[in-house]
Image 1: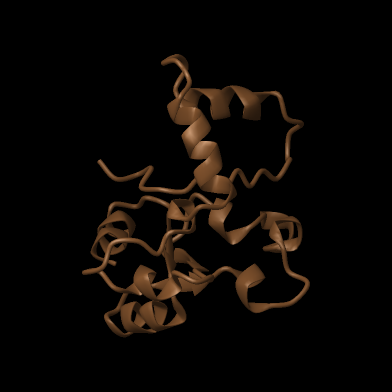
Image 2: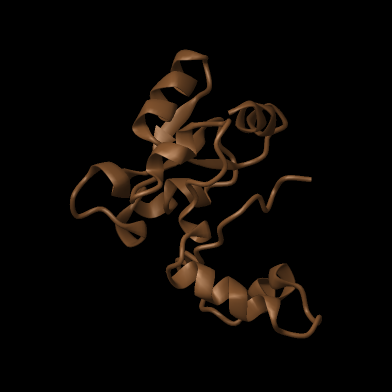
Length: 139
């Protein structure tokens, strides 16, 4: 949560993935967090989150981090900073398969440029949840 706190202090729209226990601990340490409504409320999804202002995680001007609660067989690792793992993208499921395919492609356009090009083709106001896992903002 140290990186989340620093990102928020710098005015960067921030999201984190953690367990409920990790969320509660960070909140107790003064990190301003809001759990994704789709994680807590049945019937909520990206299409109906946040009303006419759009999903909470897509809002640029905010002073809180949006929390995505981790789940699955490795969720305990996600809250343990001393144990590597816990990310759904590390498992042997679909994201890992996709990563393996990407690692075999030739170097060309970066993922960020490919996503930017794709987004420009969408109608204005389209909600896009592109499921990118990893430390994209970490430098």
